[in-house]
View 1 (tube, rainbow, N blue to C red):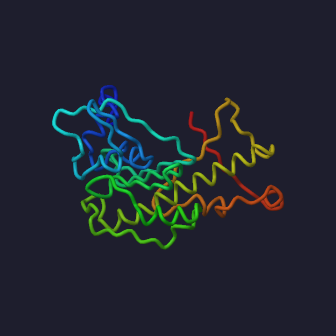
View 2: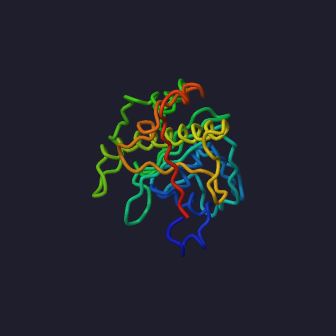
View 3: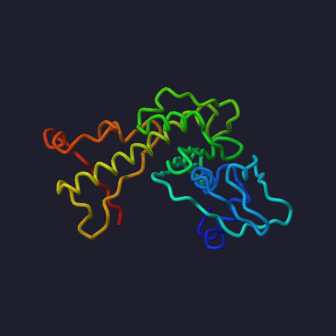
Length: 231
């Protein structure tokens, strides 16, 4: 939360109570369908966030805990505003007991769920399922960092990046399981997938199709996997 000085004092409860429209934690809470517990009651994430710096908290009500369901799959992709490092657009996607959830932060006056993307991913959990979905930019933010149309576009790009990271991670695991690629580097660290480099760049375009091919298909053709290890 914020810069290092703030991180040493900040809490997840404080971030949620503040509900900054470009904060990270609200996207995780809404994207996972978490429950916010206060000194008076329990509030579902869908009922907690009310808009720009507004929440369901009453005067004097204090957040005491946050509980999260464990998802089958989940991922987070953030495009940072270079100076503040707050979200220009951030997308948190999950699949679990509450179905598919896609939460967006930074793009609008508050965190929100992208229902059109959720419906597409619920029907088909593949990287191509959301191709062609247009995000309405009518109520999105527009400022010197990016227009509403640009932010709407970034929502789809962020989702593409996260789905590409999932595919690449599955591919590395597949290769390592069959002895075609070490699961760890020489220092014993797990092989990591780098973040999406920027708008318009998709890991699927580099690694291949989202549907993981069988081992036999992988061994019949040339395959290059780049693993970046940052000390």
